[in-house]
Image (cartoon, rainbow over all chains, first blue to last red; front, side, top):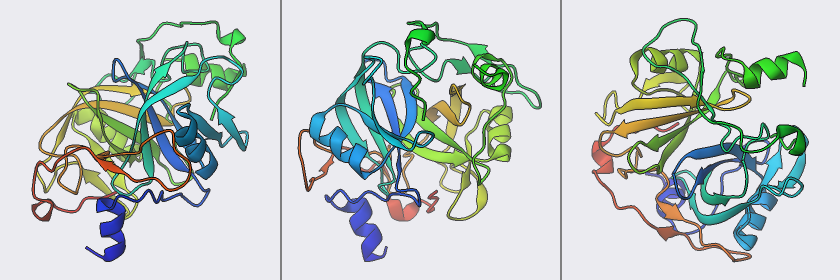
Length: 142
Length: 142
């Protein structure tokens, strides 16, 4: 293994591998259930703020702006633990979610199941119910 | 909400929003623990094969090739459930992982914790032990 890869994978220094847009992927799971709540992105500033404050900050690609989760909706995420992956281009945060994580008003963005064992057209199955009125939630999509 | 967004978010038709490279992000969690094992990508073919077979297929960006997880290492992933997110650009699969998911020989790619409440340089903390010899695992990185 080349030195750079060894340090990246086996070292103790945080050296995030940001993509061409300066972002890493972030997966937020619910600390209690382990359910995936959302997948979003962080730039260097969002990552630094999340580490410093223990509250989830993201970077919105659609709005081109730093974004504190729940800043306007109140649906904040307190980070219980943060992990980084082998090649340091993805972050996993376990969070305590206030309200719903999804802008549609649901607890998780992953509220539809994809049935397995099929070829061709697939009919999605709804799983999560809304926990709040989406009209009342400020639209904070990535 | 425009018709297209309503259908994308509230419809029952699987219409994945592939990025410019033809990929969606896929998060694989361990069905039992809820731990995130890896973050990778799927193209349309990998997604279709995963749905049809119930085994995880990915698309390797570094190798530019379709990839059945565990094809050479034996460290396959049986998909227990698949979910898709609100804007259909990310997939979550709950899997039963044979052996380790990570090419470093660890159960999860997220084997290092990032301590919170700090500013500036961060020292990562190792959490997971190796479950297999990385030299014996075919290097299947995304």
